Length: 70
Length: 406
Image 1: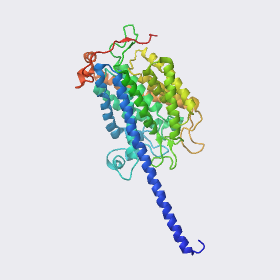
Image 2: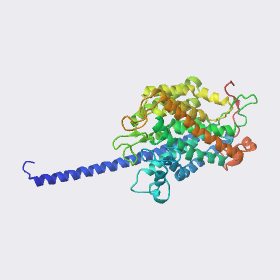
Image 3: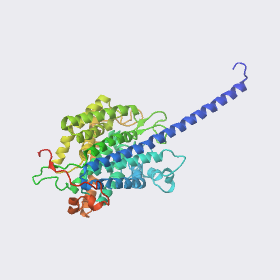
């Protein structure tokens, strides 16, 4: 940077800051999307709990009542 | 039918008022705001109604990528409570009565327990240092003891008990289906416990750069993975030693997770294994004890979820006393204690048992709780369901004496 004058150096710094800000913004978006996806995926996983209880109860019922458990 | 309907009624009732209860009452009545500034009726009014100003948080909104998924996870917790009760009351409860009970449990009873024992402003947390990371008390025990309250008014299945009070074993029609179902619950448990973690990146995150429990205390998914797997194994082995019965072994797996759920963020894996092992060991004796008191809990839900849930809440008080219960300013954070966990266990018991008993009692008065004698003898499929499970088969397995009476 020895040959550059102060204004050039400042311009470079400004550009660098803008680049970093954009990256940080991108990281925040990624973070938000990760959080949203994380909880979204827990929902179908927890529906499997329901499927499990369903199967469990149907199996534990006698033939004449197994459909009512569904 | 019953289980599908429970799910279908749970989602809208949780949307219309259950979510509001969670945010409105952490500090108890009359719904004053708590220190964290995210509770109280005013706050709940601002974020949890599906109409007016707060509807921006309760519907599609490109500026809000948190409320919907957070609500969804909680609604599924609610549906889980109804499923837990469902198994205990099979073969004799009326459909509409059951749905009313499911709504009271899923959109009110456990939500109150969660507001008190989970929310950062919950009075059990701030005043007693109650810590229940994976909801052993506030989901499982509440649902289990709600079911007990219902069972007392509902009564046993015809033929469950003999004239001398001894119990019979009423075999289900499909053991492989039962075992597979229990294993599916284990799969779903990973989703349930994962949803108990607060990850960075959303409006309610405790931290911008690391995950935490709902109390803001440290946790990683790796910790969960270690401890859940060890708990499943411990529970199965404990139940196997005593029963040799695949039904109880898989129930032991559930009991293993539930007994350690309060402290999955704190335990060391070997420790989780031992606690789960002990839960697997006491499971069947606890269920037999209840049965000898004349309670016909067809799938052991009161024991697996209720008794073992509270066992887990208290265990954490014994083994993790002094750990921070909540993220707070240095010197101010409440810590876990045996007394606090016992207080929590008592409150969770009451949150489940009292509404379960009262509402089922009222339903009984109105004749909405139990199906008529003839319908129970004929089987509810014939009476209530316009479809046949196995149209080519018929006949139940013989009913045989269960364990010896006390």
